[in-house]
Length: 404
Image (cartoon, rainbow, N blue to C red; front, side, top):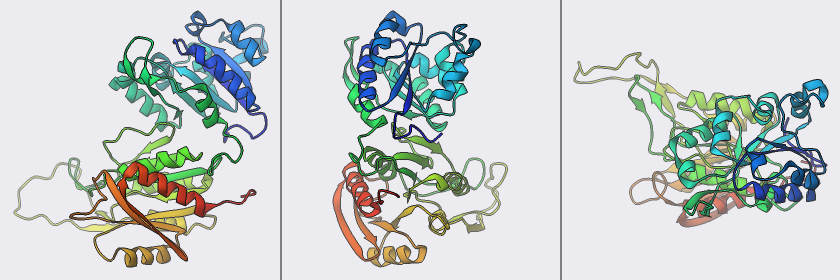
């Protein structure tokens, strides 16, 4: 399924056990205000904080808790619920529930539903800040994100345990707004964006590679900025040290060929494609299967061309709105304009790299943005701010029709 329909979306709201459960009562109300049908499923731990009767009162539907309920669907209520749901949302999502979902447990109704449904999954984490930052929790979240789960939050601030930091469940109004944005409230609401970011690594042998200086910072910031404009973003990322952006679908790759495969497998369902990755132009023709030894005073590598992912997307018969990036050391506008025309792009964002410039590995950057018949300069600023400005410009140029 692609997600909730515009009218009366069916949301299955999973409630797990944490002090933030009280916020979920308000979340049900906010979702229903936006026209959603809400079916609450509670874990045993959640029922220790708030009674099912409370959620029944605000949702208007009996709360489900039991995996095999003899009173519903001849004991197969989990299958009926899995088919009913157009979107599964778990709020709060505790560290325990995230771990169980990441490893495919199916020993209660909520975890079984996640395995049995085709509906998209969104989680709003809520836990102690040390639990959230623990490598095990981060690894579990990354694993779920790779499978297509979306995360909203957590927020930072004072916690019930007396500590301060990331781990607070995002406020109900914000969660509801992200799930069901008001019509026309955000310029990219309902639009699907596929974005590449970071470098690629082209293997020489099992321990060495050909690569580049891209940090992925600009691409990651742009992915987050487009999501804030309402887009559903899938980020195909080369190797970086950056934390996965929250609220996005993350797909990790290593090489240009892997990136091309993942992009082409997903691009047909997208409205916009943004090629922000620094894809290696060449790769070793025959990577060694074992580590190369220093027997010779010189080593010759034969390199072959990698596919041009951006040009490939732009050449598709039914292509998305296509935005490219160009990193240049000289003649910035001339080179960028040439790529814009040669690849048939809708827009290109060019930045200068090299000594004294922003770009790769820098926290700041400046862009010259070109499109057929127009241009705009975005001055040097921190990459998150620059990404927000570029995302707004992309939304302006995309300007889909109401029917589009």
